[in-house]
Length: 292
Image (tube, rainbow, N blue to C red; front, side, top):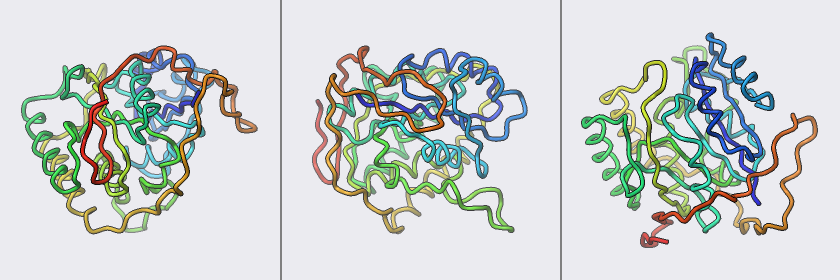
């Protein structure tokens, strides 16, 4: 069965990490904590809770840079991006993996279909998300129900399509980040996935309120950044395409992916034994959306 790398970007999330890690399925291949220069003991707590965690330091600042660093470090067949604040439930990962095994290239969470929901989103943010999602759909020929939700799971071979930069240094006169380093990264990812014509499955997901700490989200500021990303990316060249190679054949008889030399010993690959039927909306290229 495919191996799953769970990427968790974190900045001062020491109080939330124990809960988030406790919800990660026991048989994932690896857990990668991407630390954004935390000063509250996030790395130490993560290592205590999960001794086999791989800790990766960010190269710049921002959630987008954290995801770029985590995706570059991942070695599993599948990558699951999960926030460290407890808002997204890692226990839902099997649903997303099931969508990929059903033929999707990319699985994105949605709070706005049957089976999904939120105990955190405000009416203002919900309206803004609705407007931005429809604007995105018109521009990129999709039929998404939820653009601004960061629970994403996808085949690792499509990382090049995302075009995220994990290595470039900051410019001397820079403001602390490059294009895509901030919260606009989720929109950036979906724009590039749509432009590449990948098949996307929307998977019902429930968003919980942050457990500890205060969110950095701002409805107006982040809404403008999402809108700017939708418009700015339309004229940019697409990232290099992935070679047209069929997905690896998956069968219960296949052994887990071999571990890279020098890596910390990790749990067996995710088996998918807890998968359950899930309704997903599939879209790819110019093909019509379909329910499977």
